[in-house]
Image (cartoon, rainbow, N blue to C red):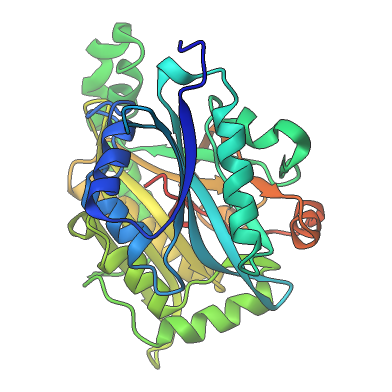
Length: 358
């Protein structure tokens, strides 16, 4: 660890390729190729921070005397609907510090600087989902607080349970053949729901209409309007790995949507549900069951998502309900609106697609 301060902080609005490459090099040094759920290439950061239809994002960087980036935090602009009102919001992410510079309070300083910058721009809601290593940089000095009344989980539904378990406990490897007996059970249970087909990755104005309906149902949601979804998924450098399932009624109105991403993690094929939303429990169940069928047909080992036990939609997935595996951190900046969100006890709509984790 460096024992003296040989770095300074810079705030950048939008990125050039040189800066994007520096962030990419820092973050890739933390990432195992076998665990990546998203790109860490320079093009990803140029897309994320310089092509947002709401507004170009900002990045707070710590730079040493050799002009190397040794820590980062980004702020990506979002539109949040809270209690039927639209708010300009930001997600903080990409919070990394070079191991040689850790335990110097750099992350706390970066978060403070980035917060000060976005608050100048009429942002009144800031949220983040830090891992357990970077959470202290957000909670120190009491700027951010965890939303403890909305337990958010990494949830999973195993398609090949013994294969999944054997990755952590090799003693189960001989039992992987039993997965062939389990899969027909999933197929049979899934057959009771009408299958919906995979659609081209595109978002029309029916998403704007569904978004307006959801605003009336959920006290909190990141806007799912067509323009934002087009940016988030279609223009994403990882767009080739995403897929879409929709449930529409007899007159073509969109009732539920599920967006998934094909991932490879721990030598397993993982189908990650990045977004699932709608207002009709039956339609939400249809797209969920159809995703399980797709995973089964395509040889995936696991279907994963971020979700909450408070989600009413999860009950409609019965009997093919995902299992909560581990808790995730969801923090809000303690602005007036942030404190109101922290107190909100009703069901909120939040998924991994609302973050930079996939």
